[in-house]
Length: 181
Image (cartoon, rainbow, N blue to C red):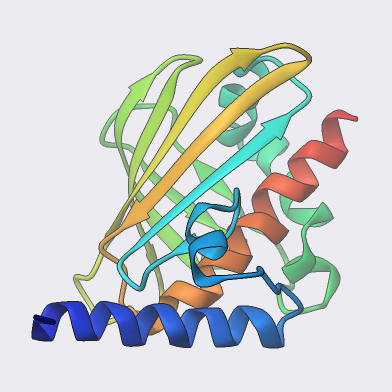
């Protein structure tokens, strides 16, 4: 028996896959989309995995450094396309500290910081309903030739999933990998 929650998740997953297909991402099956690194999205949670050719320490520092993160932003698709103008990034390195990214389009707070291992943030886009924050978790694991990033985001507005799924790839993982190559 399919419950109403199951139906909603199925509809969200199908809608997400349709958008990804329009954007040029065409997994062979719905199961491939749920398990392919970088494209997992079921309407309520995003899971991505990336390999970055740098140490966990360097990635951790980059994600929490105003100057270094600005370099990543300027290599990302949103900046290159002109969707972002000036990039006044501000990032606190303290638990409870605030951050502002992408010209104020993204704001939030650091919830947990385990140096060189994990970053957990309350994260939101400025266009979301006031008071709505998602939880972003970035886990850094050393591996041969760099670092494996395990990324999860939950609690975002339902209509934001497809945009976020692509955005993390295009504005975080790809430019960061290019920066360290």
